[in-house]
Length: 496
Image (tube, rainbow, N blue to C red; front, top):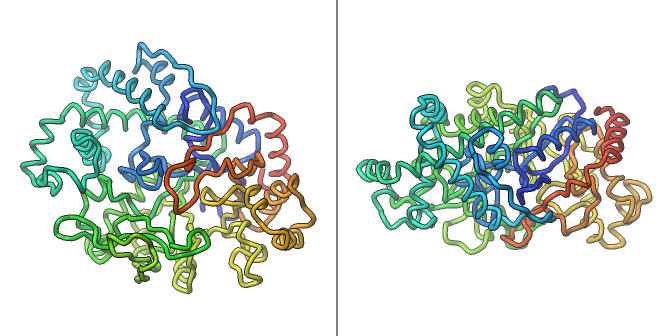
């Protein structure tokens, strides 16, 4: 991370979790107020999850495009103020601790379509919009992909009834370009709105000393424009269906492992083309964020391969990844990329060697610190300066929920490490421990800062639906007293 010797404090809170009147966190006034709160708190990092359109089960890690923005995050009130949506009438949405994605989307879609209708002729007259669209090499494929998905009632491209467009036959591509011209422009327009609002918010964050810490999944979703438009770079058969898919073996989170289902990369073919697909992704995320966490970094050292069609991840095997040769190209072709490695999971010597070669900060998670003795890589004495330390991540239970789930004997182990704690003091002690550690960067999820229990958990790995990804922060909790307490913590630990 840029400025590795600088001690920074940060908060993990996804954009959709921000408070605000539209039923979901947006890039509007609630986001600006959030940055103001971080500045008052002495926090200089805001960590978010991937900001792309959510996929299956509303997961931001299964997006229709790795570089697109989620139109649900577009703030309608800002569109109205900027003249893109003249007749906007805000709808009363009761404040809730969870996002109702279906209800939000029904309202958003109606108003965003209205904004497009009001401005379509204006866009067609302006060469600036065409020039803006051409700036993003991924955009037209994404917009065409989404228009075709909509045409086929949003089913996966694996099931599109027209095999010619599924296989991207040139004549079919031209035919759908003509047929769906208006819808293609609509999806391009949404990306224009998202990027415009994101850039202004990003500029505001920089002005107030807050860096946006993004998240980049190593894999892309099967049902995405990334795979549809670049099938040659994935392990697909001649009908463009996956041969092998991603996941992780049985572990702490799941006895069946996690069957993610993402198509695996065809690394040798990517290498033949200078890893251009990946270099474009890294350039793209480096424009979106100030620094970025690459999720599942271990997959570059060795990745878990599962035959497509398996019901669980039990019967996979490990395959050697692209390793140092890939990151030599990253350092050469994308020098601006400020990368953090999510090195959690089955870490072996290949992973540690690769991380050392790259020099990227890895991750340490305090919730993992209390089992396994001195050899545990997350033991407190292994927190180094070049790492990002967390109480827990979006995939963990909240720290209070984690504490409540531990046996009396396990709680005793925690007390021996952290000092005597109880239900009322454990979470704040954990935050103080992480922020007092050697780690140059310390991050706590907002749920931990508020000492929330399991019901505020962001995600339970290996499960789909339920309350996953739906957590929302209530605005009334962002008090001056809380900001002052966090500022005192950052000052005390040298992170202000």
